[in-house]
Amino acid sequence: MRAIRGRVLTFLRAPRGAGDAQSYRYIEDGMVVVKGGRIEAAGPTAELTAQLPAGIPVEHFPDLLIMPGFIDPHIHYPQTQVIASYGAQLLEWLEKYTFVEEQKFADPAHAARNAEFFLDELARNGTTTAVAYCSAHPGSAEALFTAAHNRNAGMIAGNAVMNRHGPPGLLAPAGTAIADSRDLIRRWHGKGRQRYAVTPRFAITSTDEQLAELGALLAEFPTVLMQTHLAENLNEIATVKKLFPSDPSYTAVYARFGLLGPRSLLGHCIHLVRDEIALLRDTRSVAVFCPTSNLFIGSGLFDYDGLAAAGVRIALATDVGGGTSYSMLRTAAEAYKVMQLQGQNLPALAAFDLMTRANAEALGLEKEIGAISPGAFADLVVLDPRATPAMAHRMETVRDLEEELFVLMTLGDDRAVRQTYIAGEPALRSAIASA
Ligand code: GUN
Ligand code: ZN
Image (cartoon, rainbow, N blue to C red; front, top):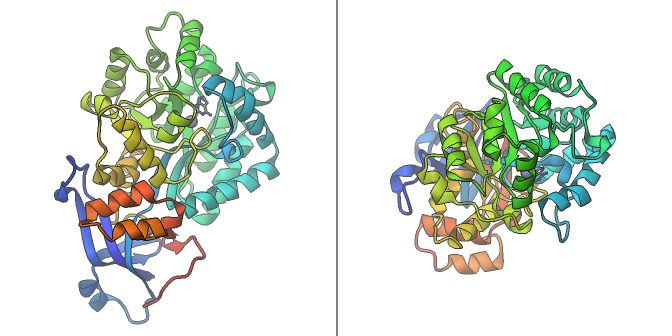
């Protein structure tokens, strides 16, 4: 049991624009009481200290913000040595850099080392849950689940299943992919905090037969999630048209194989036509906005307002290593810019809601993570809005919480993360001021 004291902020529902003070709960001198890895209570320090049993350690972060840990709903753990690869758009980038690195994950020792690095880096950036693509090798998912389980960190992951248009080292031998995925589901889905996501890499790298099998697998396990890529790049879309000539659209390919639905996370969703948007809305699938990746690989601009107005569910993610930062703060800053280029706005309240509550809701995990409320896991991030000289200097002119949050997302990164708690345990070694 422990108590964490500071400025507590958590979202209650999606903000209806800037200034929506009903969308969050903010406690200037607040306390989060943690017991058995979960949040026991949260409220004003003056009320909670009276009820605390004697001798409970209180970690005090004066002036810092305590928020639910960030959630990254689209990231590739075998791409930590692909990030920052020069000069290519999607299909060339995959062949020249990504498929080369991912083949190295056939080696369990390489996978284990990278899984530890990946989880360390997420924690350093305040991210407590991620939905991760693994490499094609089932052993890569095994390595990530094992490392996450040992830390009691709630991860969702799946090995990226492919059987064509990739190097032989990444293509599942006929008849093995589904058995391997099913085996991973049985071993890891629901073990501790781990969950499985059926992961066709994208339509180009699977035959009809494999997509059908993956759709059947998803139907067989009603709580397993699904992640894939959709309509990221124009050459990708042209290739899908050639490979699936009888389907009316890229999105329709996934629909035909039963891969859309409320548990389905579709990365990118940039170049969609009207019928595809309707398919996403009608199936309650989630479009995952990956701004740093979309800018870096030159894929295009995600139409946030258009998809939201059409009733499509939206999440926000890094997509490392196409994405260029592990930080959800950096990701929100780039989301803001992508929207600015289209005459749209991303209020800071909406950005922080996305990184926490809304991303949890997109995963169907809003009761477990993404909020500081009793019963939820004590996955928390402690943020310092004065982490750098430039931030501290800018903070001198900040007038209210919303402006502070905007400065934090625009200028902040891993340097603003003072501590990350995973199931109530500090994940970083940085100094903690004890009251
Ligand atoms: N489409 C298929 N695979 C990938 C990948 O690894 N990254 C991105 N950004 N898009 C993809
Ligand atoms: Zn991706």
